Length: 67
Image (tube, rainbow, N blue to C red):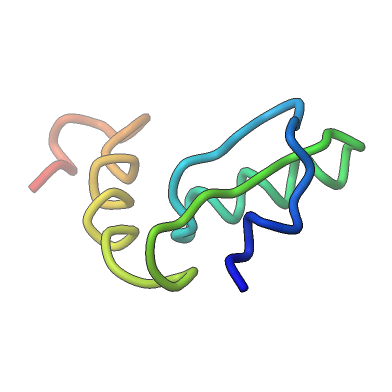
């Protein structure tokens, strides 16, 4: 059975990507009572999160610290 088949037809927030960034965002929103739906084409916590987190890691750093 497709996981989406049992899901409701609406959510307050839809997050595309079940990597560390998407799951963390969904978790924090859900803790605050927001109705969240995470869409992932494969398995949660795999693939591109490591690559994407590299870009986020640069935010707020002194330019001398950036490789």
